[in-house]
Image (cartoon, rainbow over all chains, first blue to last red; front, side):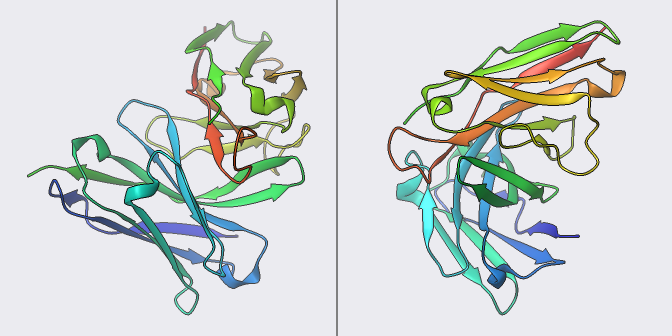
Length: 122
Length: 110
């Protein structure tokens, strides 16, 4: 059973960089066939896809966040990470990591972390 | 980029059938996947592809698609089905590796 767990600071100051990691257990990031994803949810709002990364390092980001997002993968630790720069209060959200698996004509997030609340405040 | 549009709220009487819809141009090219989210919990995949249920999802959940609209149907809704439901697909308007979520539908079981 694949499990994902987010970790990182729960409080970030405005203008600083939000940094989160996701540790994967029960499966190898390097096995291929999956994109490792970040999704966020503002308080009381819907889900927003931030982007994802393949084990090779290929990345795809939401165009609305692309200028501030960097994702990386560490296959030796079976982890992938998110950095979001120049944060404001609008970046306060629960951040989820998830495994994305695609078919020819669909996408799906089949495993999710429990979520990490990150608050941007001075 | 495209958008996926969902009704904000839907209600259903206990034991009855309810359909939750998701509209968007991308759904002409891609099937939607559907997620159930209960308060304080991570989303759970309930339907993916043409009409596939992950292991452990009750068969009262089903999916369908027509034109630019995808639907999640719950046949015989139970109290535990009360939750937020989100659709998700690829974005067909630009980079098809970009993904979209609908705004979510809050389902109330009466």
